[in-house]
Image (cartoon, rainbow, N blue to C red; front, side):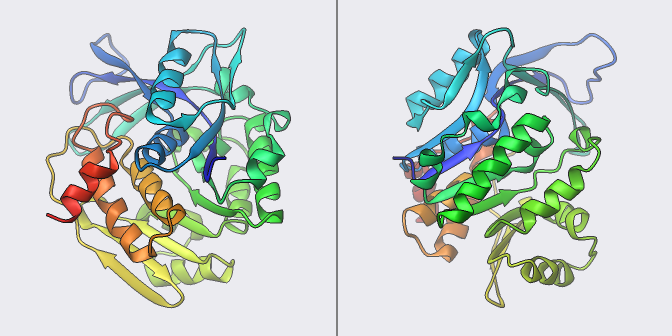
Amino acid sequence: MAKVITIGEILVEIMAKHEGQEFTRPGEFLGPYPSGAPAIFIDQVARMGIDCGIIARVGEDDFGRLNIDRLHNDGVDTDHIYITPGYTTGTAFVTYYPNGERKFIFHFTHAAAGQLAPADIDENYIKAARYLHIMGCSLAASTSLRQAIGKAIKVARANGVIVSFDPNLRPELLSHEGIRGVYNDILSSANIILTGKKELVALTGEEETDAAVAYLQAKGMEMIIIKEGSLGARLYHQGDCYQVPPVRVQEVDPTGAGDCFDGAFIACLAEGADFREALAIANIAGALSVTRKGPMEGAAFKKDILALRHR
């Protein structure tokens, strides 16, 4: 059975070929690339050698097959990916700017991804896992997907399954009324949070990191990881703070770096590693992910991560 499970959108990503390319005029694009934050996460878990699976929906089309084949070949349990006739596999278009910012256009609320519902959640599948990982972007995808995630979290909490949460805030997805309240509910249910500094401020309303950490700890959060990209990462646990320095690499494509970080971190915990070692491994995985074009293409194999770890 899967030790690590995630739930959410599976997409293909279409990337602007040129920096600064706008969606408001014709241009060249690259892809399709397998994508979707939960899918990238679970692919990284699989490449770490951990039994894992994803609960999701794709269309009855080549984009869906592209993702299923990739995940299956990397070792992800794909038995809970449901083919959805009448709907296409979700898509995400992304363009990059010289200052490092990105702009996305998502299509998954009315695609197959957004049709996942509570009835798709196999409670026994959740109960048998050790970790359930949730991505914030999935919560904003659709009402039925959000309800499915809520059901899975309740089952996990009732059966001692550890819940990890990456807010993965996307401005393009935050227009849904009440979505911030949904995020707050998840914060009260999660054991582990993996977040960026800007997201931390947005979630807590606290500008100072220590105050934001205290806010989350007051909600019962056991472990708080702050991903800072080129500055490395920090982990707060039981009143202590642990930090790892950045890994210097040549950046090609930053999309998916945080998802790969999450996947490596949770995979290490699932394997029984010390959380400080998990932090170091995850930091390397996140760095390696930016060296390949395509969001899921950056997911590194364990042997390559360890080679850099012990160099």
